[in-house]
Length: 79
Image (cartoon, rainbow, N blue to C red; front, side):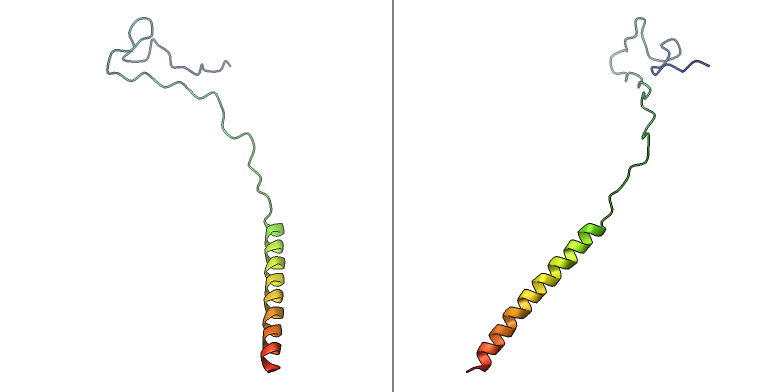
């Protein structure tokens, strides 16, 4: 079995002039696609590492804020 050519057959395509041109105002026929599409499914990276880092940064930030608040409360209560 032979593969079909990607371009349409000029003898069977309406609107083509001899030599393969088109009349003014006509739209030339589309060529067939030569790519079959995606050859394999795309793989997506896991977001687990990003979520873990986000949680670690959030906990660190909260602990720093808590430390600063404790220092301010201790400083205020000393007066």
